[in-house]
Amino acid sequence: MRTLYRKFIIATLSILIISVTIGMIVANFIYMSSTKQKIDQQNVEIAQTITLNLENMHSNHSSLEPFLDSIGNLGYQIYVINESGQDAYFGNAFSKTELPKEAMRVILDKEIYHGMSHFSHKFLMMGHFSNDVKNTVGVPFTMSGEQYGLFLRPNNKLLFSDIHMILAWFFVAVTVVSISGVILFAKHLIQPITKLTEATREITRENFLYPLKINRNDELGQLAESFNNMQRQLQHNDEARKSFINNVSHDFQSPLMNIQGYAELLLSQSVTETESKEYLQIIDQESKRLSNLTKQLLLLTSLDQKAYPMKISEVQFDKQIKQTIRRYQWRLQEKEIEVSYNLAPIRMKADAELMSNVWDNLITNAIKYNAHGGSIWISLFKSESVITIMVKDSGIGMSQEAITQIFDRFYRIDSSRKSDGTGLGLSIVKQIIDLHGGEIKVDSKVDEGTTFTLLFPNIN
Ligand code: ADP
Image 1 (cartoon, rainbow, N blue to C red):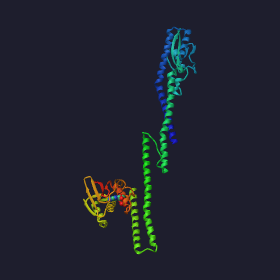
Image 2: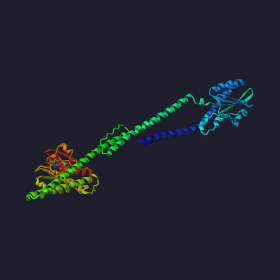
Image 3: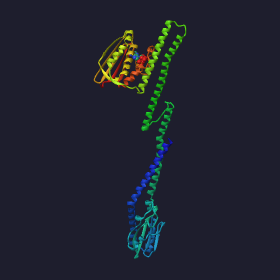
Image 4: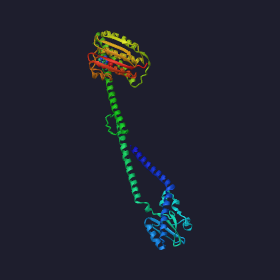
């Protein structure tokens, strides 16, 4: 995480440096193309005002010096030279005093010298501050019949006025505050990511209860919320997985123990023929139960992993349901259960084997959890948009609380535990119906009966 923090700060500083550089380039361009000429012109006007005053005052050499001294004190550097080569400096001293030849045209031809506008420096804009006599403007004037040249530039102190100092402090303050702001903001931004990384590590250690407290309204807050949801889901899955393994082990263990126990009894010498027949029947029952459990588990796992190779074809629902009823005729007769049905000839695109599993589970449940001499009603019909199948029995029914759990794996209502169920049938039914885009509803009352309603979209 330190690297992200470092990267953030480096990126900000780079942006700052790049913007300063671009700013300098733009400022230089504007200075070189227009500001320089304007400043030169302004200084020419100041120099002309000074020389006009000198000429109007009809000053002589003795009054020239105090006048230019006072101008020098106001913040200008001045160099004055006459045609006979006499010269004098006023105000701050120049660091370079060599005047170019063309500057003498001020005296000889009464031309204006634009040294500031033509002055060049390797740091471009910085040339403006060069304390060189070449970097001046020159104007001619006449005094006591003699031709003079006055060369002037504002001294650097004048250039750095109070307002410039205030501005300079302003920029220093802005830079310090923005850099500290960026550092603090980077910390504020990266802190939740560090927390998230820590929480992710805890999840890999199977700790699903690590508290992740990030209260923000931005994308990071949303990420933290999704993370918390994922954590809850993972915790739920982990609990489900553990209880699934627990249930599987238990459900395998009890029939295996029965088989083992009765096999040992059979092996002992003191078993009568009737006893041995009874024990063999139990072993047979228990091994069938184990086989059934394994088949159901395999089906459920492949449905879970979406690995089940669905074979979709046109399935005649009414025919399949009739076949299932026929298959369980002997059990119906045994319990004297009366079955009545009203099945419209309906075909739907589905996996025939899976659908047959659904009818099997619902009808055997309606028999298993039915009273002796009870009844079962099955109906199949369709409207424009929905295919409906109802399986209703007059059996033992179930409570509202049980209804919410019957589709959970291994769930069996206590009172019916003695029956030979596995608690997997309805969860398989639900998975199959989901895979076919359908819906299953239950309506039940204790001691009155249960109705399972299946709804499929009619898209044929
Ligand atoms: P099982 O193999 O135990 O039948 P299921 O998943 O098919 O497992 O059913 C789960 C539980 O729901 C059953 O144990 C039973 O208690 C209850 N149940 C299912 N169908 C009915 C029904 N028609 N009438 C009453 N209870 C039912």
